[in-house]
Amino acid sequence: MGLSRLHLCAAARSIVVLVLLAAFSLPVCAQSGAEAVSHDAREAFSATIFGVSPQQLWTFARGLLTPALGFMFLFLYGLPLKEIPFIKDITDYKPSEKILPIFALATLFALSLVVGTAIFLETRTEEIDTGLFQNRFHVTRKLDLTGATPTAIDLRLNQYDRYSNFRIFINGYRLFGSESNCALAYQCQDSLNPSRVAEKTSSIAELDRLTDSEMHEHKRLGFGSIHYIREQYPLPRADRINHYLVQGANFIDIHSENAGTGACELDLSLELHDLPQVGNTFTVRIDPNGGPQQASDAALGQHEVFYSGGTTSTPQLPDIIAPYETYRTFHLQRVCSRIRISFILSESQVNRLNVDPYVSDPNAAFQRWAFIRVMTAQCALLFFGRFPYCQEIGEHFVNEVAK
Amino acid sequence: MTTTLLRRTGLSVVTMLIALFAAYASTWWFAQGGAPAPPVSLDGIGTVETIQLPIGSRSREEINSFLVKLDMVDDFARVFINNYLVLTTAENDIIFGRENLQKQISDLRVRRRNPSQVETDIRRFLRPGKNFLVAELENSILGGCEMQVGLTVNGKIIKSFPQWIPRNFALDISAVNSDLAHRFRHHAEPNNNDFPELKISDTGDALCSRRVFEFILQE
Image (cartoon, rainbow over all chains, first blue to last red; front, side, top):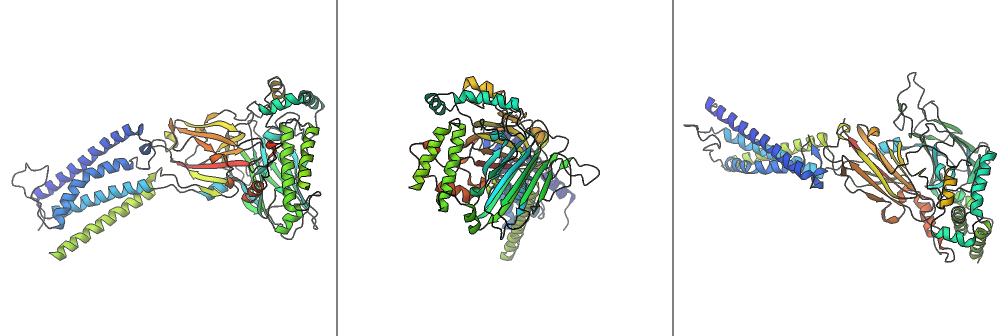
């Protein structure tokens, strides 16, 4: 039996009314939600779909619940739909038998869709893309030291432009950095400017004239400096990194970025001493110009150049510099290079590196190195390098260890 | 009667399942701004986590301000957004505490023109898709290592911010080689009572913390 014209009209009107109700209820929900934003942080930060929040969907679901339950009750028990709400005023109208399943299943579908969407939105969590982050964060160079027997590993800073920022970390601990070690005009230069040295000397001489009581007052009140202002650090300079290294995975991080002056230049060498084979020095250069693009993950070459100006492999220079995805046209404060040199050391290699002429036990050797490292830094930063005073502390500790 | 009831029940269940599948699929494809996932530690790099932007601030065009603020920094802090340095404590001009020497020594400072303010708006560095904000803190070797980071988008403070970094004043072990950190910690004792400031510490001059905050912006 087909639907009569009257039935079709009634059904259409009902659907229109339902849609109108839904359309009406959404803005109401949206309005109440908007008001709640200022009061309810949960709603302000919830997930949304096409701009609709779970709270709005729950409100809409509550509106759908009663008609859906009513229609489903009649549908499941095979009871007739005697009249349709909203259109009672049509005389001689009797709903068709086929209208009820449509209404029942449509409202059930809508209710399930709304409730399901609200639940999925509430439980949705954003996935973390660690792979993409690591690709953009740094490039990795692997150093294979299998079978090598170094007795010392040095990191030498050969050249630095003085106006960019850089930091060198060994296994996460700072070895050297522009802010802590090269903050002042007389520091980290290829050749020391006599006038700068004179300025430095006059400033530091003030510190050296402090009495012991003044010095203690300074230390107590935090009047020192977090910068190594007493040192000049003429370049090139090398630091031994033996005791920073551990059995298993190790890494050296070299981070460089433009400051507000727009270029960066850094030249370093990793020197492995007492290796039998030739070629125990690896140089890493961060160049401000453009050049061939480097692989993001590769073996460490003998001479590596990282071009922070982007790749020149294509005639038309791309505006985006890989892998950091910075803009060539906006060069201030952009990362120039982040390089991680990673390598694995065996227990015997670490023990060979972890030696001290004064103590034979590797643990005592590490402790002594760690203490001297702290002492040297504190003497330089807080005690203003008063050598006799610092020496006294050093001797005290050396004697303690010897006991 | 029973057969009809079962048939109708089955039809209803199928309708519900189709609706739930449609809800799941549409949420998967079209939803924005889900809750933050649990942080992920990357050994030797730091901790990566997602942040949830407020409703109405999930596309570049909707963002009128995205403020990053550093507070109580001890000692060297840096904030990068998409590999641009946007905040740093470098060149904050407090290079030496003693007043009569402060100016004299500060005059010798290399002027690198770093972004050394305490608060900045990072809108111009935002891009459609995934954005990465990196906050890292480095110790001088003196004292503790901590800072407070605040994120405010369109005047709304991001959930769980401002945050103290690292948590509980302790070294964020994921930022360093954990074996070396444990070795420092193991040798932290015995404390030298004559010179307590000379204690070996795992924070030392470590990169105390590197926190990475990931968020997505629509086109």
